[in-house]
Length: 437
Image (cartoon, rainbow, N blue to C red; front, side):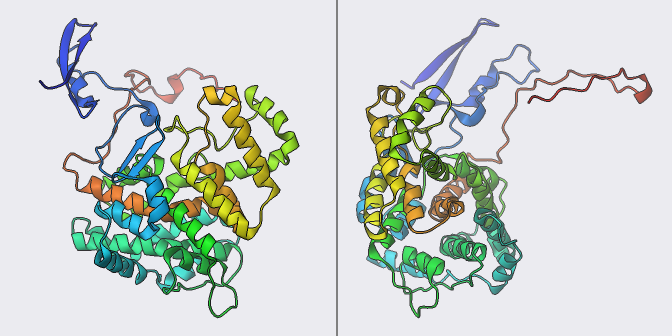
């Protein structure tokens, strides 16, 4: 017997049976509940999509209560332990892990597209020296659409493939160019003999040496960080990718929109906020004072808690191990001692435990980036590089979903009712509205 939900509209006394599909009720089912034959029917009001599914997906599964994250069914812990970022990107895009031949072809197709058009360098040079790297990345990714007009043919599978190759390949190049520009340094071209993370590190840090020598521990840590950040279900930037993609622009423009969403401090800037918080605390001795401030509402504990996870973020456990490995090479920092003590207290204090404020992925990732000598402005850029694979897999899935149409949410109108236009000389004097604050 099909599952259903019976709803009684107390305004009219009528009852309705709403089908339940995959644990969800379609919002359009409520349209039949109306007072008059000519009204639209009942709307479902859900600001910020707190309990509304906007799509079906087969890419990423999250169980926040149990601390589970899987890509295409594979636990994130197993991928972080055994996979590489490029292999994980293939999994996200294609749905399965590649065999040897498929992996080699995929890596080749990504690697041959790492270079950018020379005019992109001129475009980058147009930014002021203190422009935010994320702003530069956002602009240059959007500009790529003008270099590849064929990308507008989004229903041509071959065009989609090459756009996916180009975006995954060129994102580290553009990110490194943005960093070098902000430091007044000459751009480094890709070295396609290096791995995906190794090549990125070389473009960031190579100076006058003939060949950039990658530190294996750092290369591995960055690769794992890229895996952990590759996708995260229907977050703000992924939703932006799908919504903008629903109007059928080229994927470069849709990716630029996703980067813009990630640019916000509530999304991609969270690990930067952790660094600022720990810097402000300054020493282990000042932690009790800070914890007291958090409990009284005067301070905010950054890097703990998550909109989805009500358990320990599985990515945070992996990143904590990576932080130890990286700092064993680069040298530890007093700030990390503060962070570890802060985490210890938060995991033992009933105030935080009862509120399920566990460390999230942002808590330790910033310390790894800082240990590499990267400024906090680069943190969201390092987030965008791997998330591009996730965005593109979500974009293509949405594009090929026959149920999807151009995104057009409804609204609950609370403005003025109908009124007639009055000539200016007959209008009453309006008191100016006082702005809050």
